[in-house]
Image (cartoon, rainbow, N blue to C red; front, side, top):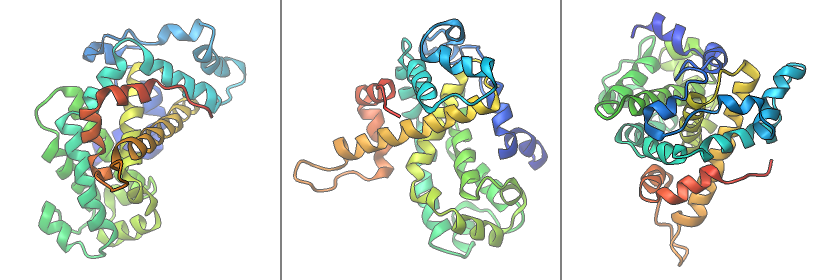
Length: 280
């Protein structure tokens, strides 16, 4: 994919519109079901009572955004459908998604603790010239997004783009055309992304998978689901820290780099956290 095509398909300014139209699976298509979850989609929810109805009723009323409570409930209901949580666990556990996730812990050091592109060029073969971050994203994705199922490759690649775009504040000009100096400067201003890379990455995966299952969403609805995905990811990470990160003695035994490995090994725990009701 060249940079022009990449800008048209993935730039932050168009995320809301593209994601809201179900472009990553087709609005109302039940993409998770086609991919193998056994889910039938939630398009029928819009006409029913309850949180899903409330979520879409906001559109009918005055165009306001769904409330955090309604969007959180709709996200939970989506994952509570038959086999959906299991399918999400399988995607998160895939070699493609895990490989990209774990690569970010190496990348975080090189992008936040150094201001010299030499080490990045040595490791990834990407020069410091214009478009270096977009080229770096492609190299990382290409290294890990091989084999497996199409959905595993698609979600892994999307998460790489989401996190690296967030790392430069969603500035597609820096992402697509900035040189190393511009990238380091922007990453420095948005250090919180790499300081909480597990949250950003997992939230991206959850959000992308949810949007594949939901009917077409407008911009406000898509943003509401994105924020609820962040909340859900943070709750899962909090539970990981409490349940798995430390031994009974209090000794730290797992790092955040091992989050997806734990999700792979502790599937029932993860699925329960996806379906868990939350207070907003």
